Image (cartoon, rainbow, N blue to C red; front, side):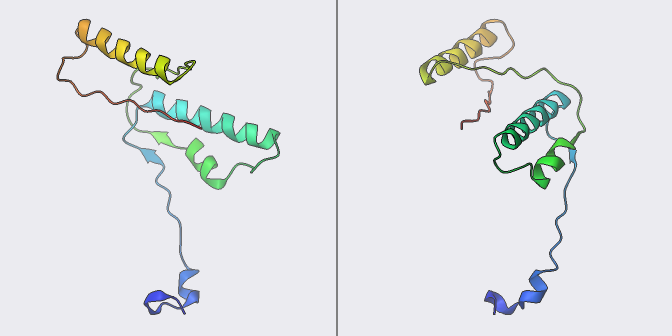
Length: 113
């Protein structure tokens, strides 16, 4: 038995639905993510690790629905201190240049492995 009184056979009828249109991210962000996924998947194949999953394939087929937007910046720093310094200097430069006000909200997306 399964919790809640469901029979095992009912659980086998689950269907995944993938939402392929991305309304949140700009085209440049989606394309950059697709390149990273593609590169990571290729490296896994080369190293005989887990091959590409169906989810990786689906993410590569994501269709951005917003305009191009600015190109993302990819940055590699020598350590966490250098990374933090770069972020602070960049935000301050944007405030000084009038791109941001001191009360603007800034978001930073990062990934660690």
